[in-house]
Amino acid sequence: MRSISKSKPRTFRLHKQFLIFSLSLVVFLVIILTKAPVNIQLDASRAATPIELPLSTIGRTIVDAKGKAVLPRGVNWFGMETDTHAPHGLWKRDYKEMLAQIKSLGYNLIRLPYSVAGLRSPNVSGIDFGIGSNIELQGKTPLEVMDLVIQEAGRQGLLILLDSHRLNDQQIPELWYGDGFTEADWIDTWKMLAIRYKNQVNVIGADLKNEPHGKASWGDNNINTDWRLAAERAGNAILSVNPNWLIVVEGVEKNVPGQKLLEHWHGGNLEGVKRYPVRLSRSHKLVYSPHEYGAGVYNQPYFSASNFPKNLIERWQIGFNYIASENIAPILIGEFGGRKVDLNSKEGIWQNELVKYIQKNNLSFTYWSWNPDSSDTGGILLDDWQTVDLPKQQLLSQLLSPVQVQPPNQPSNPPVSPTPTPSVSPTPTSTVQLKVTTDINSNWETGFCISFKITNQGNTKVSNWQLAFNMNQATINNSWNADFKRQGTIQYVVTPLVWGKTIEPNQVRDIGFCANKLGSDYQPQQIKVKS
Image (cartoon, rainbow, N blue to C red; front, side, top):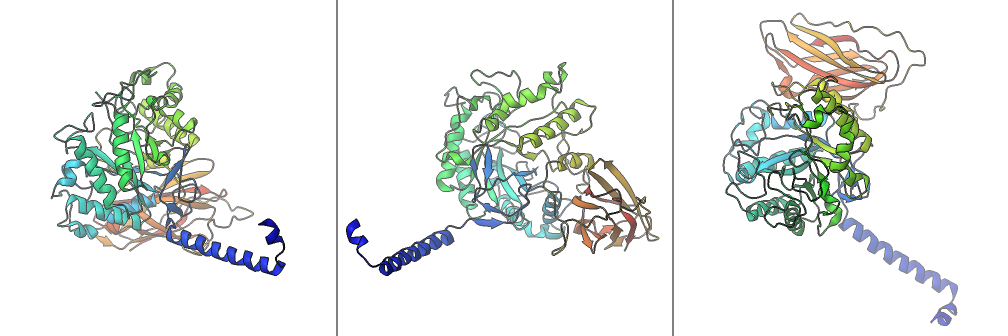
């Protein structure tokens, strides 16, 4: 055959090669166009660029459909696993505004807990249907409420991780069955959700069971208690109907052959993965997920050790992070949180150390919790369900992608003056009825956080107020409770979110932002509030 082909004229060979190339190109384009991954605009990595869903894993890294590294970092918004069968706080807030606030603070993922009983119920409660978009939830079942929350999260560029938190509405069971439910009930619920949200691309996966503990074991091959085997059964059942989801597997508390550490949190013990890894039909869909808490939840003995907090690093490495360090699989810390973030209390020290550890090791997480009504941890929101716990958000903002607040076609950073002008202290001005005060809550070498408190000093309510200020040598990276938009080079106009547009007499609205310094003249100036 080679001798025949060599005897053909050169032009014929070129035409044949061109024809083969053209046909190959057509076939290639057909494959690409019919199997193209879905694009979604998410600040899901430090690069803050669009990612292509679905997600998978390569070694220790979660990647998008084009192989680009993605860091899911978000919050837990609980309530669907309780007897309300709906995310909490909707008695105070519009659900769409709640999602918008989560996004505005720099988070890209919501871990959404549910109970098996709740999804089988026809009823929801704890929702004020008279607040804004909440009317859309009226008459809906818990599952239909979940649909609408997920759909709106997708529109706003937020990922969703579903979490089988409880079987009934009352407690977290030790095992994946019990409380009147069988293993089949648990797996069938997962398969139903995997099919239901197969085309809802922002639902990225299944956190199979919240906090196995007590009798739950790992690696002992006891069919009744071995959580590793149950995770394989459920994970493979889900992948059989929806191969796109990530399968997120938590640890246990104890009962792991050869474990080195004496104490673990519920769901926090992943020591068994080294000898007994979870085996899925699609190994590139597996993520491990420990839970970790501080002394404010329970004063574990190691918080009182003489080498605290230095002993934490070794504990975290032994308990879970070796999985990432040894490139076995990614780590997503599914829960951590606490009320204190100071540098004096055990809980505050622990929480600061863990944030540094997450940052250093490039881990994903979902913080517990968005809700203020978590009795032992509190939340990112304060009890009014609107105001942000600023010290807590400031700590977490070190882990979050910058949020673009500039309008289209504006430069990402304002120009820096070659000869900085002297810093001028803010000089608040106000209308007769509205007064604004400012407070720089924190100030470090490269950035600062500031809050504005707008007080209604009058006897009538004020609606549709705005704040304006100039800021020369700083650029905002995240904000809360308002929309900060730059107009021109240094002026900002601030509009409250829908739920904050009205201020009743003697009521105070708290808004603010964190920013990167670009020079010494960084403080807001000429601050004005008007209605």
